[in-house]
Image (cartoon, rainbow, N blue to C red):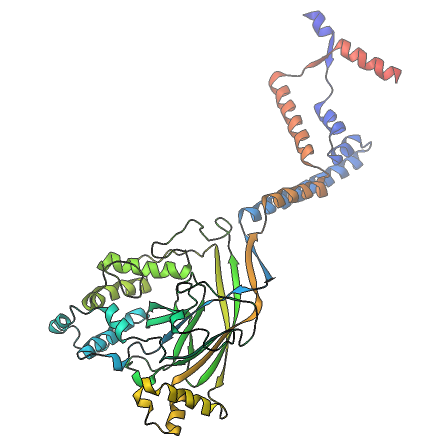
Amino acid sequence: MVREDADQSPRPSLEREFAESTSLHGIAKVFHASRLLVRVFWVIIMLTCLCVCVWQISDRFHRFLQYKANTEISVEYVGHLPFPAVTICNFNRYRSGALAPGDEDALAYIWELSNYQNDYDYEGESNSTDSSYLDSLVDFNYTEFTLRAGFRMDNVTLLACSWRGKRNSCSAEDFSHVFTSYGNCWTFNSGKTGPVLTESYSGSGNGVSLLVDIQQSEYTETETIEAGLKIQVHDQVTPPTVESSGLALSPGVHAFMAVRRQQYLNLEHPYGKCDASRTLKRYDNYTLEGCNIECRANAVWEKCRCRLIQHPGNEVECTPEEVRFCAREAIDGLIRGDTESCDCPVPCNFTAFTTSLSTAFLPNEKILPILLLLLNNISTSDERNVSRSISEQQEYIRKNWVAIDIFYEDINYQKFEQTEAITPSALISDIGGQLGLFLGASFITLAEIFSYLSRKIQRLIHGPTRRPQKQRQMSHSVETLA
């Protein structure tokens, strides 16, 4: 045992060994400095750089853990674009000429209930709470009444329809029906009556052109003061929300609607707020508009066990009494925040449209004779036009006709794509850059430091070890030969 100790000698200092072999350049400067002042100088430099490096790396980690996202905006040029869906509603929900005897009471009741969709409560006085009055409406059917007396899209209201400048290339048959808060609305290019149309050219005339008669003489509205159309341009998978997103068009104008397509690509948690797993029961595709409509429909169903006509589904339709005393309260509860709000995250991928609207007076003096001829051609289906004078017919056009041109402003689309502000690879590269800039270190240097610390802990636990005498003599012989 004594002989074994004699053959061994203490190993050199781990600190000196580390300083002489590490790739961390500043450590060697400290150990090899011959003067104390120089050594202190390098120690100060090392500590300062170390503090700055730790601060920068911690700041990068803090920014990374915030999971911020950038939005990249680009313009994508393509050869053609799918044409959007166009939903048209009339400010007049029910036509006076379509009302049957006894419908006036139902209509008055509807006017009172119509305000439940707004952000205020109706405070007018009526006899609608009288039990005998409600009993008379017990068999009233909103769907049947609206389909029969509501706004219609036919050869009387749709006077002209052109696609890509070709006259009569579209008709009322190319419009699909949809219920909204405006009653009957009609959607062109919904994808339900045929394939979705595409457009390869921009500018007026390269799209859809419509001439619509609003039939102001048929108006029965007493709760609104407007006359005209409400129109919305939207994606085929997005249900129309004309009451909030539609544009109002007055009669006697030619409206030019230049459309721009926008594509949004959003990130999921934690970088974004979209949820790719979200689905809807009442719609095939998840959209923000569809989610809000479904939320309202569910609120009415849970409270009243019925469905409003503008809400999709197969549930039983609400009776006038259920609308008055239950459905209205359910909707108002959502608006006021009395019930749980709708959890509707933004879709991860959706299409939106921006519309620039400009209008011109309709008609000009030169085209008036042609329009009068068109008006006379439809007089056979509307006997009220037969006995009108030219001035009355001219006045009728200005009070009832709306010309609409909807077209792409450019055959391109804007893409808004969310990207990670700091990706994991960018974080690693940033950390490596900070280590190299302030300490001249790399990830290999970190491995060297880890190796040094593990050996240091091992010596503290097991005590200092000695190097065998033979190995020391061999090392000395090699140094002598050198």
